[in-house]
Image (cartoon, rainbow, N blue to C red; front, side):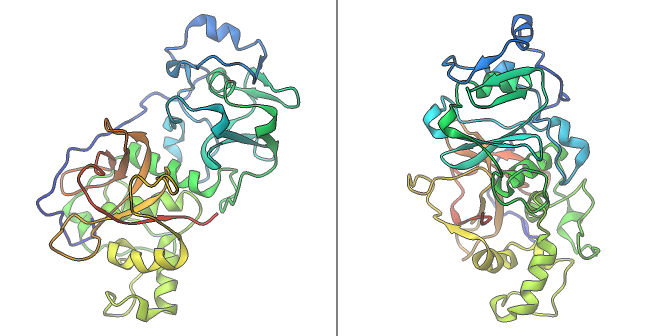
Length: 337
């Protein structure tokens, strides 16, 4: 929630999905027979469904973003029953990565250099055994290429929209507390300023997640206000780089100008929700305009809608919550490719 403003009457218990184990060669749930099979090459034409329990325990990639101490606890989920026809991948040799896309949108990244081989007839990939098992039913030669997977501001090989999601997952693991201190005015350094990582409001989740992709919202919003002051009527005094970017109402004009605008509908087949999308919500229906902000997660609620990565109100921590079932979404934005 915006600093100096509380949530009102709505409240929902946060769903905190934490991968607590550090990265390892294989999951503890992976049978020994699967571990032994890691040394045997597998073709991408395999049609067996991978066992979710056998996947790697973390992404295992080098991420240049926030909270590097949490990198070994971050994992992402692919859509259930993902059809191979929806999947494609890019081999980024420069960064020793494979980036998997679903419906043309980057969804997960895999490190190269493991002991399990995956071959599609043209390429041979050295992967972790869990990653090999997850990718083998999805990849075919026609949907696998070498090169770059998309715009990558911090040059770590992870495309920006996916990097935002990775940052948001680290924010969940960090579990910053929504406190009275976080709601107040805190003097920040500029650029690259942030409140202490143990605390934060809803906007701080966005600032941190986007910074994971190499984009400093504090600097971007401050410079935008200086250039387009009339577009920010809520900034009544001189621009203040310590607080302006931490207010939902101030973020809205920036996103409208500089990010892709997508439909706020939750069920539009022509413009579906994507993990990493930023949504602005209305928790006070009696008041006009958005007052809360979050990021679409890769995890789903029981009704099949995505959870929202956010920090809700006093007493909560950054977590993945089922908000879309009852909180109206007013705006949705995506970082341009």
